[in-house]
Length: 278
Image 1 (cartoon, rainbow, N blue to C red):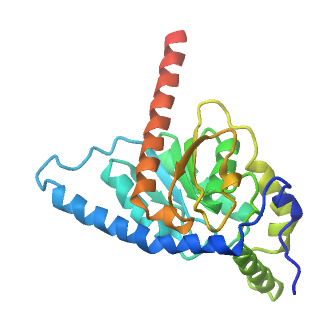
Image 2: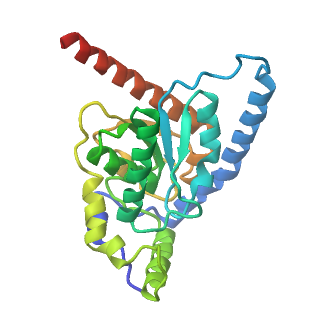
């Protein structure tokens, strides 16, 4: 059997890989997707088709970042929900699959944030699913001038290696592809060397004051150890969704909306205090 390429420091002693049986929880995805479809039909039926029925887009811009081996399309449903509530959403630019070196992806997302901030003249909130949330955590710590808040969904920030062995097989496959010359995929150093260590360390940096942080997690998560999502720096919100289903379950979308609104209110309150004390 091939050696697991994921570095041991990504799986601290306090965490563990989910057992095989927990993968059965991911079968909830069918029901979660159906719940989203029903919510969409209900929303269309209750929407009033006259002038002024659409929300004013005065909320923060939001960048949506997909998880490992997922593309922007996986967060399309969440994006539609956010736009209905007045948010301007932006894709990460990960078309098919989030499979590249995490440092390269973080650099690309940083450039994306700079472009959005230049256009909107305000900081951006980031919603990241799984690996996308870990990338968001590192970006917020390094570039608080670009980020006003982050919402992570099933992101094992404390132990990226605490994932189901099925993901380990995918990682092994990507590393194998890199060894035969395929570009744009994770290499050994990305998952077990200096690159992995730097990404892990960046995702644990202290967040500057004024950045809202909400970590959404589920004990029904069949892919990662849910305890690895409980970053002490975050406000924790528990949901009853599968790992993959967090991207489409409207109950999770509701929690994302609540978190984004709370982060915005927090930022406005802090801005008011600064003005008052000036």
